[in-house]
Length: 100
Image: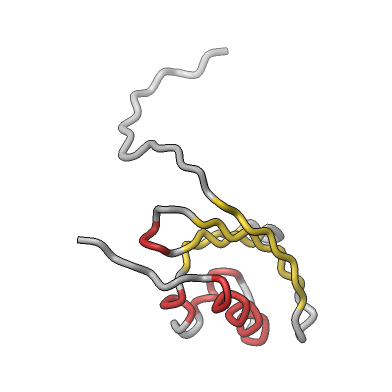
């Protein structure tokens, strides 16, 4: 059975070599984090952070880590778990940069 052909309006389509760091750690809350942190030339210096266990992904920079409740909401974490994730992310995320 053939799916009907539909015309797509691509806004962007590019291929890029990226670097991905896979990290597993456990903090004092005993929550296990299995993360993939992808560095790319996109996203103004922010990184693509994927929680492999719950399937949630976010584009993050250190500026995002200071927003109250942001990590808790994005990754469905309690305050203690989010604090542990925040500690790790401060070590690996770069400062965002914006171009004109």
